[in-house]
Each structure stands twice: as C-alpha cells, then as structure tokens.
Amino acid sequence: MDMSEACIDFKGMRVLVSGASSGIGRAIAVELSRRGAGLILVGRDRKRLEETAAMAGTAERHLLSLDLQNTAEVFPAVREFAASVGRIYGLCHAAGIVETLPLTAGKAEHVRRLMDVNLISGLELARAVSRRDIMEPDGGAMLFISSIYSRVGAPGQIGYCASKGALNAAVRAMALELARRKIRVNTLSPGVVHTAMTAKAFSVLSESQVKAMTDAHPLGIGTPEDVAWVAAFLLAPQNRWMTGIDLALDGGFTAQ
Ligand SMILES: NC(=O)c1ccc[n+]([C@@H]2O[C@H](COP(=O)([O-])OP(=O)(O)OC[C@H]3O[C@@H](n4cnc5c(N)ncnc54)[C@H](OP(=O)(O)O)[C@@H]3O)[C@@H](O)[C@H]2O)c1
Image 1 (cartoon, helix red, strand yellow):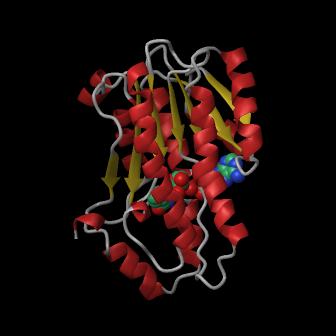
Image 2 (cartoon, helix red, strand yellow):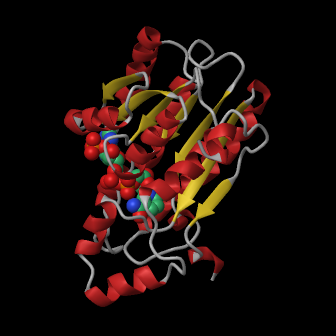
C-alpha cells in the first residue's frame, strides 16, 4: 500500500462513473475500486463496461447502459437505478466526445451533440445523483472531466471548447449552490492523453501536426492512469475543502 492509498480511501462509498467503458473513465473506475469504492459504471457499450467491471476486481459494481445523447433519459434512468442500488457518495462524469470541424462546417447540430454529451448529460447526472434521497446524507463529491480546451482555444475545436468552458462555469455555480449540503464539485482539465479519443483526433492530423501537439506538452502526453489518481484525490472524502476549482493536469501545456 502506498501513502496515497492510505490517505485516499473510498471504503463503503459508491461512485457513479460515466464514460467507464473506455480511456480516462475506465482508468478512474479502476483506480476508485482499488481504493475501496463501489461502482456504478455508465456507458453505451455493455461489453466494454463488463471489461471495466472485470478490471475493477472484487469491488461492488453495477452496470448502467445509457446513451447520454438522449439527455431526457438520463435523470429518470439514474434515479430509478439508484433506488435499486442504494445511496451514492459521488459522481465522475468522464463521458465525452470530440469532433474536429472548422467554423464553416460546424453546424448547430454538431455543436448540440457536443453540448449534449459533454455538458447537458453531465448536469443531468449531477441533478440525479445529488438528490437528497440518492446522495449520502453527510454530503459527497462530484467531478467533471473537462479539458485544457476549456481554457485555451484550438482550430477546429469551437464546439468542444464551448462545451468544456461551459462545464467549468456550471461547476463553479454548482459548487456554491451545493456547499451548504457539503457536496464538493470540481472540474479536472487534462491535456492530451493517450486514449481512443486521441487516436481518432490524431488520425485526421498530419505527422507534423501530431508532433507539434506532442511537443506542446513539456512532460509528454499523459496516460489515463495519470488522470485517474488525481481524479481519486479530487473525489476523496478526505479532501474536505476543495470545491469550485478547475485543476489543470497537462504536463506543463498551459504553463507556457
Ligand atoms: N483523451 C484526451 O486527450 C482528453 C483530454 C482532455 C479531456 N478529455 C476528456 O476526457 C473524457 C474521456 O475521454 P477519453 O479520452 O477517455 O475518450 P474515449 O476513450 O473515447 O472514451 C469516451 C467515453 O465516453 C463515453 N461516451 C461517449 N459518448 C457517449 C454517449 N452518447 N453515451 C454514453 N457514453 C458515451 C464512451 O462510452 P461508449 O464507448 O460506451 O459509448 C466512452 O466510455 C472526455 O470527457 C474527454 O473530453 C480527454
């Protein structure tokens, strides 16, 4: 057991993780389970959710297949599911999509799709999980995986940047609203991380563009595990005083 394992302990607590079928969300689910959390794993792909559940080992875990594009279904689905599972301590909204489109091609429907999954579904998950009859009565924690593109721009990422910037703003307001119930709410903004999403984004770039993206991170590109343990720290019940912040985790990208 390392020092952080002793300090960050989720024993007896249940956390709902969206995007748990892949990349960053999967790594967070595994990290939380390693630290004793029970899991509610949310994603579309049932088979990959089952793989995550297997990786999470012996921890209590439940699978909830949900298409977060259908924002109206999120709240009732989580509410109903929670009734059968029991109290929830925390939420990590890691599900997200990216679409690279120049302004001229980025129609309202494209921007809406990004907003629905990255922002609105996250707010709907929070609305359900934070309910008094669902969340632990002593409070809890919610974490939204944002992006450095909530802080800096990039060509072709207008909709993505808008969705993540809005997420950071919403989280600040949510943190203030929920502080009296001892519910902490934060965003974590990673730089580029090796996942399926990055592989897809890199596939439309030239070799020199990929090199430029990589070189923009003084410590190199991150891994899902780099993000997972910081997510655990932000969500941990031992972390009592941190709320309403956006933490950049980017190998030095935004320090430049
Ligand atoms: N990778 C990076 O460099 C990077 C950097 C900064 C921030 N982020 C953010 O980190 C988060 C995770 O990204 P990742 O890189 O781990 O991506 P990923 O490997 O592509 O995983 C995305 C996850 O989101 C879920 N998802 C997407 N659309 C969904 C929908 N309509 N309904 C339900 N689930 C949906 C996927 O579930 P299914 O596969 O089951 O549909 C999957 O579990 C995202 O919010 C992303 O914006 C990523």
